[in-house]
Image 1 (cartoon, helix red, strand yellow):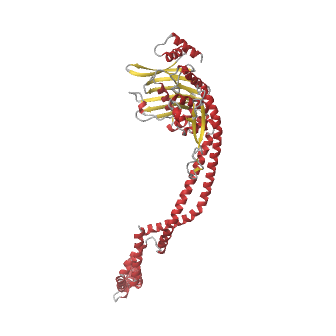
Image 2 (cartoon, one colour):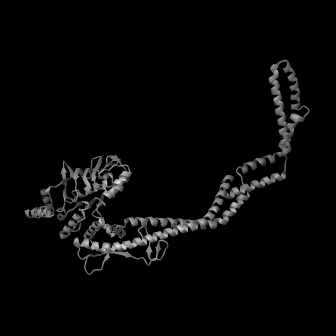
Image 3 (cartoon, one colour):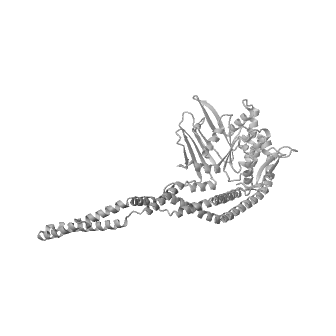
Length: 564
């Protein structure tokens, strides 16, 4: 329940504070005084979107602060899960800045706007003067029926089943499409994969072949160069190995005389060993390398095959090998896809059966709830000055549509809401058949119908605070008094805050605030004042009599206030 509301620098409001209580809280005042601005400010603490335009002229920021008591359990749990304490009461403060640095505080701690939006609908419901227009939208009728019948949880389960069906159907369709596509591509994939496999490609093939080609092209030159090296090192008349060996013997004799030459002996011996190894390597290489015309031709053919595959598939050898791996993976996936389809079909059938069965059971519950709703609505609207009203909940059929399984079968279309298409029908006049409510209901009738629905749908404890902004628009006289009594009835289970122009409703208030607009120091200022008993009589008299208030009007107003 909302206990206190403080508004600062909001539109034409400088600073106001409202103390509210249980029951019916009424805001009255001249047209344009700023009554709806107060409710718009409350919209901010319930998480509504906001812009800097609401900040009072020449001010840097606006703020709205609200104190709530006796929070619903779901709100306390949500706050606790989010790390906020709300033991018995909660202070919500929202600051809007021209700099764009808007802030939200819960119990003095910063919080995201998203959290405020999540809990806002559970602590305040703002019923604007145009909300009854939602009755003109048949898609809203099912939600209202579900709320009346206590079927919201089952409807949510229906949504889960529908989404599971949609997901299973999508997975099956995609698998079938992919399988069909792969079947068409299978022959080409197999041929391409086989062609690449036969080529026996290896990473680095091209570089290796190019190196071999270079050797074969210069084989004679390489062979001759090796022979020259062997001749120079070992086989020639003045070969280096022989000369160095002879000098090594001479040097060892000298080292026997002076040990200082021993290092040179060792180096000469090492050089001789290296030269012999070099000679052996040249000999071996020379024996191995030789010009073979056939080998070069084979190598050229192999390179040509590689270049052909590169032109055909694009990229390097490594990229072609990756393509081969992808092709083989696709072929394996094709085999797996054929095996997966039956499992997907079973999952889809389970989801289809579950969704349609849930929809069927929900439809039966809705039909039972619709019968009760009809009786209760007709009883409620009679108390609202519409004694001959016929109200119906009709379940529409779409049998003329062709079946499109799995979502449209036998004239029924399955959606997240189930298999029903519901619309409210209405006849306010005796002898006239019920027609779609959206087509024949007047503004005043819509207001009363919505009020009747709210009184039936809202259970104690659902939403503690209800805000009605001129719900009495389009009505007057005795009907206004009836609507006021209905608001009073709703206020027995919820805190009701109501903006009204009708004295019949204002006279029933448990707490009455008047909103006034005045000019102070050249600026327009809106103020809000809580009225005491004599002041209430004067305000109701103003609402009854307009500019000229007579003693008779005051007496009438006093009777209305005291007779509440």
